[in-house]
Image (cartoon, rainbow, N blue to C red; front, side):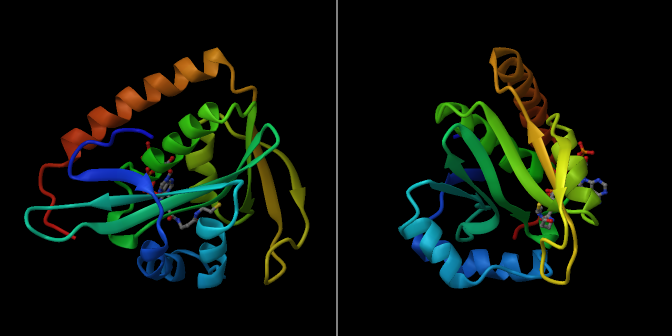
Length: 186
Ligand SMILES: CC(C)(COP(=O)(O)OP(=O)(O)OC[C@H]1O[C@@H](n2cnc3c(N)ncnc32)[C@H](O)[C@@H]1OP(=O)(O)O)[C@@H](O)C(=O)NCCC(=O)NCCS
């Protein structure tokens, strides 16, 4: 798990986080997952790993402002979701959540990372391209509403890629530390 600069923190998702996660889920996705899906992922799916990103400012209680998850399918880390709350977009937190997953994927001995993304979701595609994900295929009408999915993959997760991730982490932690000035609370 990446040690995020304060007041941010990354930690594993718990069942008690799910109502906060669902509030972000409903605003972030055109077809949100059901609460029961998160329940299953956190409580039962042994292949799944979900993390939340929290912020804690001054005396305010810690608040969930993003989350991400993946499944370990043999040697493939399959990224199942990633989202940041609207108010916290464009501060580098999508980078933080994705980088964290990629480091966790390493720890689980993944040799590749893959995901599906809506063809129209160019913002997410840009995020993934930052980590050298490339479009390797598609699934027609994969999503509700008949939108196509693009399949994006990065491989191999070798030592050269790990060095690249270490550089990205260093840059990001500097960026996040600078951006902390002016935070006005959740
Ligand atoms: C995708 C998502 C997680 C990115 O979160 P974020 O915290 O805003 O992302 P960051 O600020 O870390 O930006 C990461 C990169 O994404 C790209 N990006 C983010 N917002 C963008 C925008 N509005 N326009 C173009 N590119 C954008 C950029 O490449 C950016 O890198 P940069 O800041 O170095 O230029 C967020 O937009 C989100 O929650 N979207 C809804 C849920 C979703 O679609 N998830 C992906 C499902 S496959």
